Length: 411
Image 1 (cartoon, helix red, strand yellow):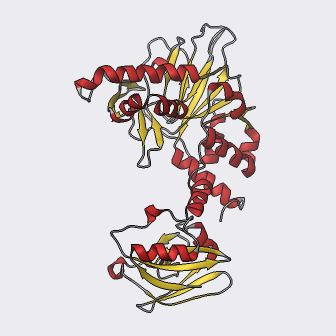
Image 2 (image 1 turned 90 degrees about the vertical axis):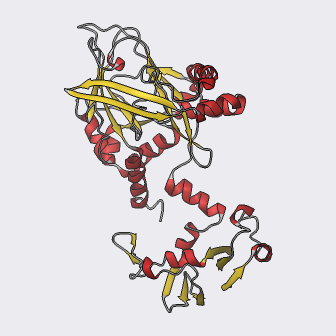
Image 3 (image 1 turned 180 degrees about the vertical axis):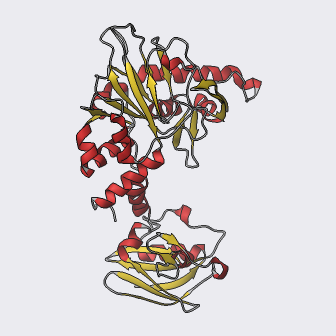
């Protein structure tokens, strides 16, 4: 059945009861401050509702939508937010609407279901297309969640590329094995995704012991757990480290902690500390010179960043790259330092410790995981050399969606 109706809040509730879809649409979608004009649609027994204005705005005809550019070209000079349908019909797989200005629109049922306002289909869209849900982990589970992938498979197979990108997005970490012994080997992996994130350290960077350095990561001493480049407003999303040469002696073990796991643990067990870690601004800083380029980077953000849905979306943490200026209130200083130490200690407690074999590429989410390294002995006959590169999450998610479409995993 297809009808067009104007509902006030009590009428909407009555409609939803009659349509037997009240469990699909929670109360928060029903505003008591507005009047809703909707079309209700029964698609093979699935009852869905769509606002008139949304349907008109998303008309797929060639006058309103450019097919090859995948872009809306509807003329908003003449767009009427109060538009109403005068005729609604259907065939076996689509809905046709004639609007009060005479314009005609057609919508495929599968297209409508994927974009419906039902929480069930919104979740499906979020999980399948927007971003796969993250699975947080404790260090004791590291070898179970950290999936291994073959270098040649990734560069030659869409299925392997999809598996690698999806595992990395879900768990925040993965390992690429059997990488060629070349300083340019990481370039082929980057090309499967798109391109690197260039920083003031270049398009790629080398991690090895350098005595007079502008970065403490280029020492052989212990490297405390941190996220890279928190002083960038748009910091690199994913860190890739190719272990070209691994130290043969003691030390050099990697330390990885899931910052989301720790943040959620603090939220559940230390709510006041969680508030401090999410509310108090920190000034992140990096001042120096690299390859003749002087830099003076500053950015302010809390240690734990949350979005409008109170979901964790970025971790900022680095003892060396935390500036000495405290932007917050003096009353916050002592309690914030205690929360900072709690976050640091728990990440150490929950961390995984392992030594990455030579020839592997360790891939991890730089805005989720904290990483560090145990000290190691460095000498002429016992060196450690890593080739690193960054990739933005925008590029990874984009490639992941493209591969899903190519493999017919999504519409």
